[in-house]
Image (cartoon, rainbow, N blue to C red):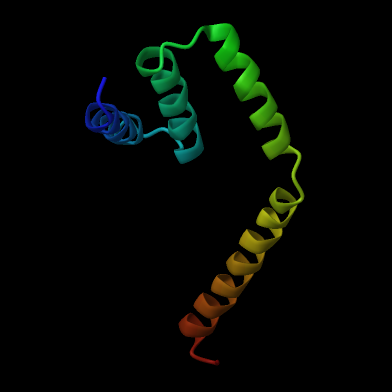
Length: 90
């Protein structure tokens, strides 16, 4: 299979899964699993061993601990800005 055809399959799968309305991280996981199984012809056991290590490392990283704090900080700032704009008492 040529690189161009494999790239087109990956692009199609990205648009397909994200067009279905799944979350971005779920869509990317589904794309990677689908490509590994059908395009690269890997066995499910090998895909599972690769994916389990990656998911365990990424779910237990310190960077993910900062994401909720960052989102809550932005949410608080936006809430204050909206309240200020509505009351016109900035």
